[in-house]
Image 1: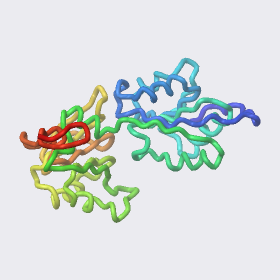
Image 2: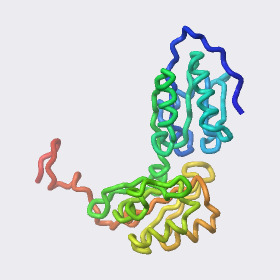
Image 3: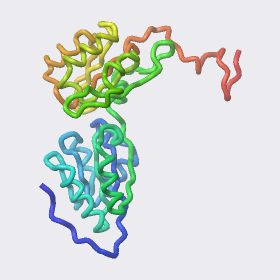
Length: 265
């Protein structure tokens, strides 16, 4: 349900709409810029099904808050456009990083068509929060140097060139979003490329108070997901880096490695 329309001033130049990343969930993982914009918002349009309410609560008293969990994109944009045309500071608050599975391309296009500018504020993503909570580096010298962010095909599908089999064939640190509903098929495909004992971090509502985060062998990925009834807000990080050898060492800090700021031995 949308709020009542604001009166627009035809002579007013609209302010840019701010698309802001709320991060993975914990309020103290917001960027300073994101927090500052929320605190200045006249209108906060936020994804209440995914964003921590404590973050929305940072908006000032009197800020109009529009929850989007029951709205279509058309209804969301109707509110955003109306309030922006009325000269309001509109903050469109997304979970995680809005540039990753945030559907912001459609929103930016509609704002551009209306002659309204956009500012995007990045947010910490769940894969970063998960790696930090596990005290793990996902790029280990000599083991893995690439991080792939992807998803299972599911109902909306992915381009054929980005099919899971192609991503898994790299055997990189593979971070899978929006894939818990298809975990059996995902595990079966991953086992064609990664060893069965490859560590998989399973993260549910990472950084929230009820976070659940565990590392299991790839062969147990689907079973554990079913046991925990995980179907949404779940991230999988499949990576040999989660069991990195102790002798792994970056050349950057080696005494024998020359670079711009330090001579070699």
